Image (cartoon, rainbow, N blue to C red; front, side):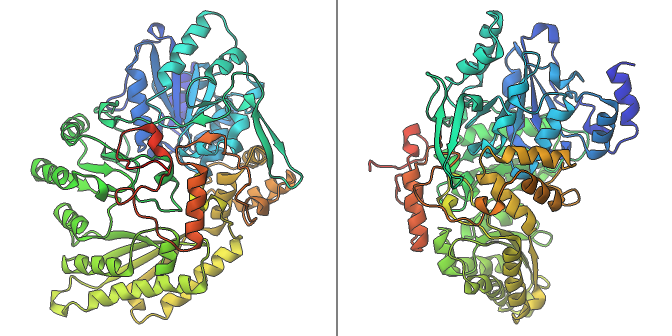
Length: 621
């Protein structure tokens, strides 16, 4: 029985078979005999999540613009199909051609969050590709990783042939051209890997060795061959308006997590929050031309049939022409029933005015992210929000007709005290007070304030990369402080409190700042049945605890340990644009609760000016 017939038979027995059949609207079909390179691009999570990812859509469109490349897709099979494929030894296949992934030239995996790491091993296993890069031969695809988590690729280094550091639009053409040339000349896998290490942004883990000190920290990280770069510089697209963008994005048969047109308006952020990795690694800030965005909006709505358009950015309020763009979208599409979504807005009069134009106030809630309850703590994290601004913003929202507010905070931040924790509940209460100051006949129903706290995870290339974490019980104790403080507030009936899982936070911290020693534990977790760890219903913390113990890995070494400013980190070989000197300055500013102005107010010499252009105001040091 051939694979397609077998797949048809099996798909009748699994949940949501449309996840695996391909043939979506705007899918790209090519003749395999007319291409030189098959590149299978993977999002290591379920189809509905992966289909919502803009980066995959951009690369899919860009790669397929080359006549000599066919880019296909694969996502993590849900556990029901996973079980069948393992039992019947069915190799994982791409959606476009239903051909086995293991027969492709490249398998490219985007790594967006730490808790998908076991799913990466699932993809390799079901594809029947050896887990370890050192065990692969010329018959196996080149496995390449990209995305934000590759700013510390070391926990996954043993499983990947290459990592691409930075934005994918810049160096992939050079990679494909080199592959074709070396394949034509009969060069082997090791020769190709060595030559790719010379392409800007490409990191080949097998060409570097790590030495450790007796205390477990890194003594040195060096290339093992002449000609291999000491540092890998991230790749940046400086002119977003000239860059490729998918105006005919793929449209799934089943409802995806974000079932809408996504209009990327800018990359980077001027704000400089000290906990935020994205705000650091995506510097400098770059905006797209507004006329181009208007054209994209027309084309993408026409080519997809979507009924919602979302503006994508780390801080939409900071886009220079936001008011003009929103007015255009309302004037041209709102009467046709197209909803407009504006995530990542700040609490100010301008943003609330914009939101009032695009939201049904009676149905929607406002989402604010103060991140910390006390002013001292907000200064430590450089949030740039005062309590006055927050309360004034809330009052403007309530005056405008909103009564539902969602507030996002973090617990476990550096220097946090019990007073800072209680301040979260107190701030929520003060916001509720602002609502009840409105005359009763003018209120829009009962005030509903939902507090959500996540537990802080220090990330590479942030000023908090030196910060220590806490253990599970300490995080839960912090949540209890907030919960008790909420119960003590006068307006407690208007306040609801939720908090994140502490077990997951600890693991995220280990994976975010881990080194190559973590790989053996990752494989053990997978062998114990660990997949879809980002999903609460599948996550089992005991697997991880057992795996770390069996591998002799001290979890506290990666979490609760204090780090010195001169420690060599596993990711220090990457040049992410922001200098370690700048990050150390910001760490010291945090300890002094000293606020750093945003980039448009004053340059702080972060280092990203080396990329030239964009919205960057850096002067010489």
